[in-house]
Length: 139
Image 1 (cartoon, one colour):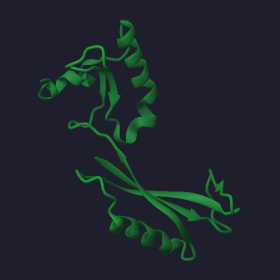
Image 2 (image 1 turned 120 degrees about the vertical axis):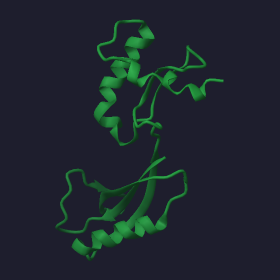
Image 3 (image 1 turned 180 degrees about the horizontal axis):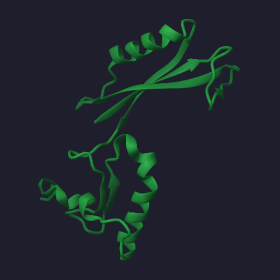
């Protein structure tokens, strides 16, 4: 599991962020992200959140933490996404395992998946991304 930690901070005056959100109390909130852990555990590691908060306080000593979370993102065993028909159920198509790269390769993977589903020639070679490369999952 790819686990990314996030903090929501009360921005106060003078902290700049390109996408500041104002909550119902009128506070300008900012999202601070850091640390990516590869772990088989789904529970949030609060020591990692404390470390991220301590690092932020070096530069923003008066910040107030509003919220903290850990976001778990699926990654594949070989760090390549799974795009295409399931090895066991050919009418089930997968498009998963992107880890932190979902936004950056989403358009290409969507195009590849659409071509596969519609039986069209693929602009991208599908072989490196086919779920069937993991034969252990086929039972």
